[in-house]
Length: 614
Image (cartoon, rainbow, N blue to C red):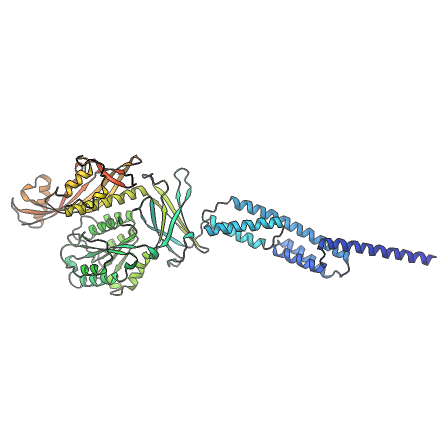
């Protein structure tokens, strides 16, 4: 009987164990979704590993993985316990990642990305959608890699990188309020970076209201040699000190340089010959044959007005749209200029137009430091002709190609009618893992009206010397009555068609805007400072007072003998400070309308040279 009871107990226990085993197996299948335990464990462990685990999470997962190696295939109870451990760990990991992902999406949604290109913004949006989808599906595969890439992209788009040398070279305001900024970009080795796409550039302007930099909408970006023309004012020294081999070498090297110019894409060159006079008759042209013909016709004579000519050339080319520079070939020995080297430095510094000087002659001259100071202040370069001889290759690469590698950034000026405001601009360039920026303070209104003034005054000089009213017509307000003596139409048409019969020639030497007064949105007053070089013939007996004293000192110094009827040719430097009224027409173009301060009321005249004409 006892044996029967024991047998029955064992049988019941067996049924109980079997029942428990079946229960464990059923519960396990629910967890593994019907998969075999080992396969399910391996898949889940692999999935969790792809999340990018913390060190303690890795240890826990590894421990569970090791426990699985010792579990027998039919030990459903242990399998169930291990599965529950793994599910709990998985839940903890996914909960942590879900919180992290939500924080990341929220944080990045609030982060300003001022240096994100359109492609960057698209990637950021895609990353955000991917992470949001992970949260929704509770699947954080590759989350760590994605979050790191996401965060790095946002960081690179919200902070400035370093490694690039960015330099703002010059501005072009000829089509204001559309502005062109020319930017030079070099890597850490000093090499020009040429593979930058438009979405890598960012321009911002400091707000007057709060001092923060605000993004400026860029209209177009390109590298200069891809589309835009370069204008070169080529200055040629034909003074008597250049006679012989020096002038011959200069002619050859200038002609050789013309062979490097990209006339086919619109580059233009103007020749400005100088000695005792500055030849202002040249025009910007792409006719290489005409340029060569002019170069080889040069004859050496007279003094060396180098400094006056450099100022003239910089201001002359400043009114030409597009990128520009001055390239001078000279022996460097200034004789007869009214301006000094420091005057040239001041002018080139304000215009930011590169001046390149090639000195013909000896390897060194006492004037070289001054010439180097001029080129350095302008962003140009000083070269000895003997350093490259007739081989223009290296010279071309360092000067011409360098300028052709500028990036042209075209944008619309914010608040363009705030003409008197100084503006702080920043340009930031972002490359592949590197970046660089440059800051500059500009007075764009002043620069714009300075450009207008230069174009107006050059037109005046051209019409004055040709005794015609052609170039000025488009720059003067036609709505003022032609009989209004304060009107520029009356004044200019009278002067240029014969108002100064004894004037041989008149040259604009320098000009600047002193102040701008905004009267209303269509009217401004422009106070200016203008210097002219005037050559005129007068009878000796017509001179009196201070002018007679100036003349006698010069004639005595130069040992000229004169009588009362002697005809004297004099060189005068005339400074005047007129104030103009400018009107903006219905076409949006500013034109010179009237004098509000007559130029003759504050003019100063100094005679600095004289000869007997006959």
